[in-house]
Image (tube, rainbow, N blue to C red; front, side, top):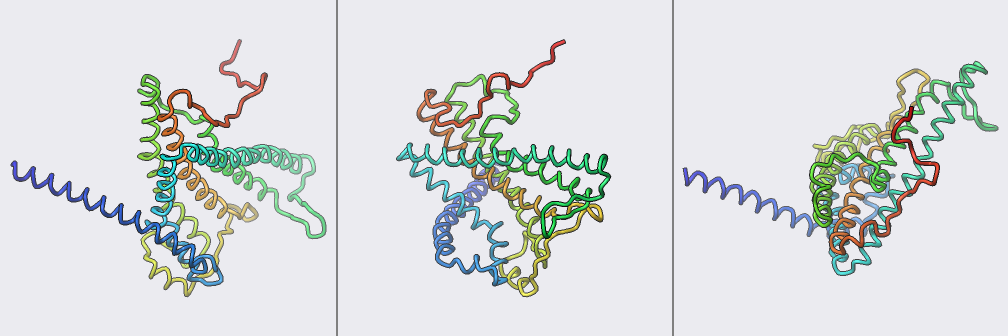
Length: 312
């Protein structure tokens, strides 16, 4: 029994050791891979070459790309340990990106409402089957096209405002122990949560959404299990086949945009996971006086506060 337990422990330690070696090897290779990509841009930017497109498809969902991104943020963090001011600057830039994209995308909600009003007027008052915009060569689509296109505005609000809402503290949090612990313990929980939960979750969703997007843009359809050599072989028959099929004969036919928005959303989650880690570390290090430092939080003006309850 004791020998069996010792053997199991040894095997577990061996697996952990192999995993650590693999991780450090990939981190070391990330510098080479990043440098190679910068010095050979034609291999992945020249989309007149079908092989370049397939390289983008493969490396966009690859282990190599993940470690390049992760190593980039680790280098930033390492430098930030020496220069906290630099790390605060990175936090401000990344949070500013989420805030800027979110505040801009939020206007899609207004556009959605206005377009719905126009649709109602055109259907019920003018009894028109279509809506025409423009001069010379008009933009003309059926009413059903505009009705289904409202989903795109809704998708923009959801995907592009997600990290903005996180920065603003607007997401619901289930608090079991967080409010009862000290300030620095809260920051430790935030750091652990961002690295253990946010980064792996974003990575996993990225792997699925990346290939899901490309399967609706090109043929032959790529697969996450395809090797680079297999994708390069497929590139001989590659052609663009952008998804333009709607749910109704005259309905919205730009559903590939939803797949692109999904990839953008996951990329922003990954980036902001690191921004949240950096802010949590800096607040942990500098203490309570640094809470909310450089925090660009939206503030409701007087009279704009939402009602918390109904009064009768």
